[in-house]
Amino acid sequence: MALAGPELLAKVKELGDASKSDLVRAAGYVSIKKDGSERLNFTAFYEALLEAKGVSFGDGGGNGKGGRSLSYVATVQGNGNLLVGKAYTAMLDLRPGDEFEIKLGRKQIRLVPAGGADEEE
Figure 1 (cartoon, rainbow, N blue to C red):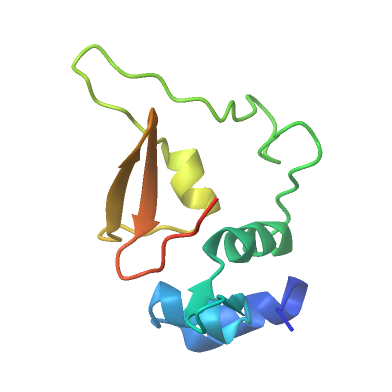
Figure 2 (tube, one colour):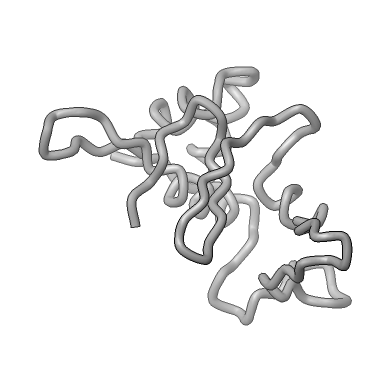
């Protein structure tokens, strides 16, 4: 059974410096594929973590601090860079030095935590 709410926050705090994959696994956000291999459900984990921290997805995307609400839209800049702002990285509790693999698809870019399992859509 996957942890949620205060239990999830306690588990994340307890594990401290564990890898993201280990956190997801320890919190119970794992399923078994048809071939018997393990699938880590990062998206469900991060959504539950955000909800446990008081971020709601059903209220129009507000960030809970007043002021502008997050648009969940990024625009390619004039120099070709695509910027993901601090508000988004803070919501996922990302830290300087966290690494991601860049997965390119048809007209999409996915960022997958380095060493983590990519989720199928």
